Image 1 (tube, rainbow, N blue to C red):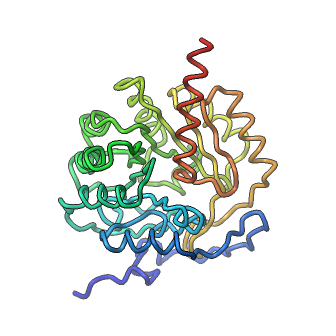
Image 2 (cartoon, rainbow, N blue to C red):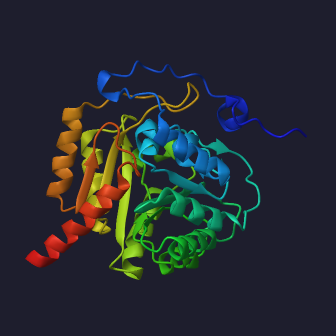
Length: 318
């Protein structure tokens, strides 16, 4: 059997091949970004290739890849480029993943050192085929970065570990990342069509458990808007996150990767995003990023510095 060509949409997303095409509306002016390029971008790309690393920047088709890579910032995606889930919004390939690469944590750490990163985001595909969902691989990657680049702060953006024992989450938290991020992605009413393999309240509970295991660890979560949600349901997600003691919320515009993906219901205006940010800050988040181009790891290093400063200010005023 010949290997899959992940550049071909029907091989990249076999689970979506039967879906009817959804028209992709023209992007408004506030969504458009420059094509990637330049010396910094090319240097980052070269280091990723040399270390045989996968990035979510490329796999998910992030619109900010040009800006981030030109500054040497990239979000490492560990455990392969094939996900066991088939979320309708996501451009990461779906199927049966390869075996874990035991040398990957070391290669990630080496790349972090060479890029001179102050802050790194490490994410992964969902690995429902593994008993621990890849938790130990996350922990090994954190430890390898700590050893090779001790001054670098580490943010993990993890799967939900839905089919794993509680020890999976405990393994990641015990490795002491500086930020634990897990995205709720959308409002609960849209889970059946947007994130069918996940469970809203399980993801919410995961974030809450991180704080129970280590109250000092920063937690972060994000959603996309423009999928068909209404304002009230977004405000409810904010309340749910705060009840789980989430520190940092991100809100960004959903962009449809291909006609086979979930349709864009509408483009949320910058003014509406500003309203969401104001509402979230009023609910007590330490940090909020709410713009059309906000993504989980966008400006993550600068945001982490602000997050830490916000906590110190709040504690000083307590």
